[in-house]
Length: 125
Image (cartoon, rainbow, N blue to C red):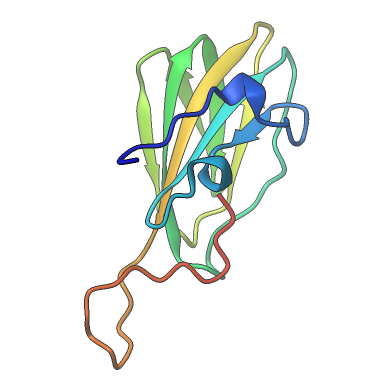
């Protein structure tokens, strides 16, 4: 088969909002998560400095605030936000449900193999 398909609603929810799709899709170079955030929901503040993953948060429904390094970034439906690996990030949802698609990818390694492969060590989705 040349493709893999999954419905995020069929994937167990983590932290009462996150549906990590990388494992069921068996991705090798990208992480994809759907976050359906209840009113007032907050994610755990975190960064990706340990695995060097950059992320893009795309708000596909509602409005929310993403705090990046203590800087609140107001998001509306259709907004996309790039976050570098070393920055701390946290989703803070408002009074209504919102939905994000979170995409992450590791940096291309500078190892001795120099084959252009993506490093996936410590991938967190």
